[in-house]
Amino acid sequence: MLRKRTGRSRPLEGATLRTYVLSEAFALIRHMDERCVAHMDMDAFYVSVELRRRPELRGKPVIVAGPGPRSVVTTASYEARRFGVGSAMPTSQARRLCPQGVFLTPDFSYYREASAEVMEAVRRNVEIVEVVGLDEAYLDLTGLPAPKAGMRGLIKEIKQRTGLTASVGMGPNKLVAKVASDAEKPAGFVVLSREQACVRFAAAPCRLIPGIGGKTAERLAVLGVHTISELAAASDEALQTAFTARTAGHLRALARFEHDGAVSEERKVVSESRERTFDTDVSDPDQLSRILAGQVLELCSALERQGRQGRTIGIKVRLDDFSTHTRAKTLAIPVSGAAHVGPVAQQLLSAFSPPRPVRLLGVRVAGLTGADREEGQQQLALAI
DNA sequence: TCTGGGGTCCTTGGGCTG
DNA sequence: TCTGCAGCCCAAGGACCC
Image (tube, rainbow, N blue to C red; front, top):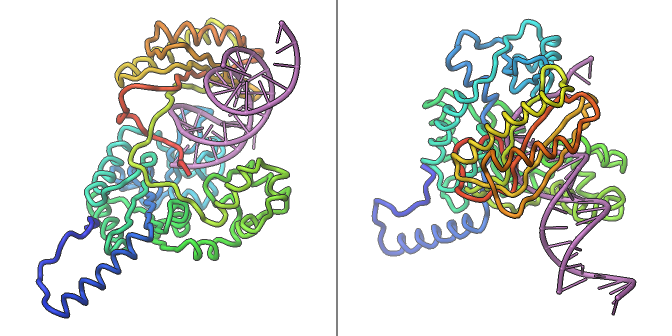
């Protein structure tokens, strides 16, 4: 459907053939010249997957959230969103806002299976696909003859095969495609040039752009920059009072929807970690040490299964005042076994000696080398 | 009021080295 | 031998994303 065209079944002759060949060649050159990127974003993915096996919940406010007292909402159905429930919101707050909501505990292995079904359909149709997390992918459609029709067909096929809907954004780069896919959810289909994106989102807050979060938006607001058009028009002098020259240029380019990042099939994993937030804070050093030992075992067995090793061993400690502290040590040679990682992690923890009760403890191995990892590649940040 | 887990990338500052 | 400097690596924290 979205494969590059290779030939034609009905032969043409003479002048008709020449005209046809020329027009096709020019069209192809135009297509090859203009990048065409699609961003496909599954609608309320975890909830939608749950509704496949629990159709009786359709139309109800369904919230997928962790079970613990300190958990957060992973996904909320559009019905639940009307009550103000959203992703990353504490579950306790979601319960207050939507007491009649149906709360489900996340089942990630089931979501991974559903994601694999969707991505398999995508890969069958498109050569260059960059999967981001379980529910998103960028598709490079440059040079394809009818990308819009092809994408519509692909979304229809996914709906037929999996029962799941997706929103699509298309544009000349990943940034335009990403913002466009979010513009008309659910089941949106938005195609924009870079210039059209600038116009359409001119009055939108800077936070709409991926890469500009709350903190950056706050710093921009101090400069009097609130909207995307204001950021696009901001001077170097103004931006450089709050950001480095490099960041200032980067932010303005984002606001102008300029982005030349390639759709990349390969995402290198550079670190892996295990961390846990406790239901109640832990102060006992021996208990912390035992928990850390368990995390080390879990992490190291995963690394060894993947044939990966890392040089930098780190711990992460979040105290009861929500301050987060990291400590790390880089070794001369990469390691992966618990016999090597464990003592270093324990040493870092004992040297830090948490001054207050601990809310979260984690261990991390970074600077990974070794076999590329396929399994478990779940939530990777958007590399824009 | 309450704020997960698992990631990436950037910035800043210090130490080392030629 | 001392000093200044550039470049690199490392550590820590922060911002951001799904």
